[in-house]
Image 1 (spheres, rainbow, N blue to C red):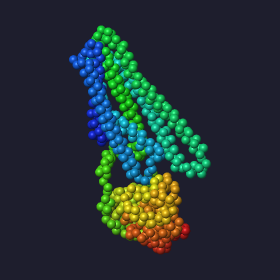
Image 2 (cartoon, rainbow, N blue to C red):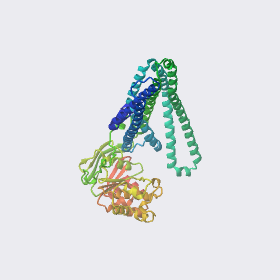
Image 3 (cartoon, rainbow, N blue to C red):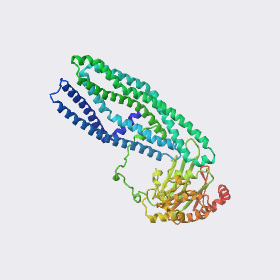
Image 4 (spheres, rainbow, N blue to C red):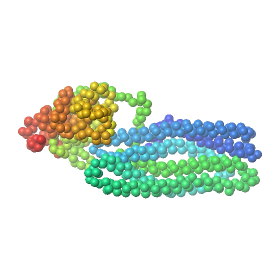
Length: 583
């Protein structure tokens, strides 16, 4: 049922093009019916048994016009079909991407990147192809009934005889469909395994080289490819057998027609035109029956594709894929949100009340977190490795879903931190910033429309301006895959510039300055604190702890102590131990 529900949703989502397709391809089938009747009339007129009072040349002219109409309708139907498929693909991929982006960051997608890309392409394509074909199937089915009725009226016995082998083929195909479904599923899985392994190789080249594991990696790659080859061969072999049988059924049925009509042709009860009509309609009817076979196979394959996509999203509900959203296909469809008009007050205080988060299938996380960040203050969160510092930051800004607790911006309760804590309210830089394989400028702006002056100010604030002067292409320098052409400190400062180019009330920073040298880090923090803003920072640096308006000491996911550094060094054993080990 989930497969049919999704198919119907896709068809109704593209209602306008669905109607166009039904009309176009139904008309295309009816023109095929009229073409067969015209050919029959022409042959009957030539052989001296005319069924119409029109001349041969008039019938030929009508046949020519009918052929032109078929060509025009075919082109229009193809255009409508492509538009429909494009929109259905867009909706499914948008829903997939939207769901993945909204997945709690405590959960990684359960497959490799390469396999996920394969599913975005192949499984989505399988589902939309099924929806598109089923959308036009009723028109073809109606035409097949018309063809059958016409043939039955000419000779009922021959009509029934020729459909027996066709029905046998459908039964045979249905018998093989289960085995084909298993082969197709295993073929997809083996292909995804190869693609995923290729992605892992590219992301781990240095690790492979340092471990001298090239031979082992190649051996593993060959094994995966061998398995993929075997599965694809089995899948293709069975598919070609079924296709071969279905494709030759017309020739078999044509032979049956000739055997059963030879006496009728001799005594004049069955004309040459009737024979031509039988052959013409037989190809159409058998083609439609073959389509039914394809629909049966596709339906089973679509069920597999849905299960794979739901596994990718770590859910059992197909409703995620059925969500209706705008694809923004026209420039006017995209409404740029006026960030300055967002309904938010200037930050006076950020209050965290009884905040909890536990990682799935684990007791680790944060528990009963309570503190307040006043306006224009510096709050530093510190603690041992694994004490919950990063988890706390991510839970506050919505990158992890809180289990319970309240987050307040001034007196306003924030029910959806993930969508609330964005510029101009807040900006966030993680401990390990991510860069795209584009230019420095593109990585900093990320599509933001900012002036060159604003960009230069952000580069100075991030202490990146001198580095850029030494680069041949300046801010247009390509950083390579994941910033491979930059040092760790340059990656961190690029992420900082990305943060500075967007004005915000609250700056949330997760210890990313640890990759900078002391001189650069001191200059960076000095620039940062010249801003008229509020700061929530994870850090172990002495200079920051000394400057902080309040220090929050984390231990085992809970606040062990909080206050000014001088007081904590007198009252907190944990802070004393941390301070002793800070260089």
